[in-house]
Length: 222
Image (tube, rainbow, N blue to C red):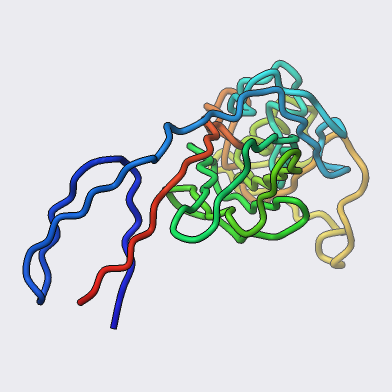
């Protein structure tokens, strides 16, 4: 039964299997191509962030000057038009999207096709079947942690009182009754004060660099 290997660099490779040793030469793999900015980033409502911002280049959201972006927690959607020329090849040549660094997980859509969830390095996905010659619509949905929003809320007027140990003194009546949190400047609610306004923020969002990478697949006989 055959199996396949992906090769990411040109060169001469020595392979050893049950059938003995063999040499395989790989060529025509181009260099990675960076997908540079700008990127449009949209945010869901009622989480303290503006509806949309433009990033001239990818940065961690915690470095943004806008407080609602800086302290955003949730799922942000990064959108961009990507031009592919001369376009992806089929067969043994595969086209991959390498997201670089993501904090903490990403879901990739290309031309409306869901290419799956990436939750650990390497944040890389095969886009050969979804890519097309010319313009391509790329969307990367990135979900981070709640930490930055909790710290952001600590910059605002307290809505509850907490003891020296961090535990809330009185559970709000709306929470006991299973109702939504009443409208207020703060987005989050916790029964424990985990962070202060001076706690360090976490790296957040799509950090990149985002690159297109070509790989060659070769079937290897066992």
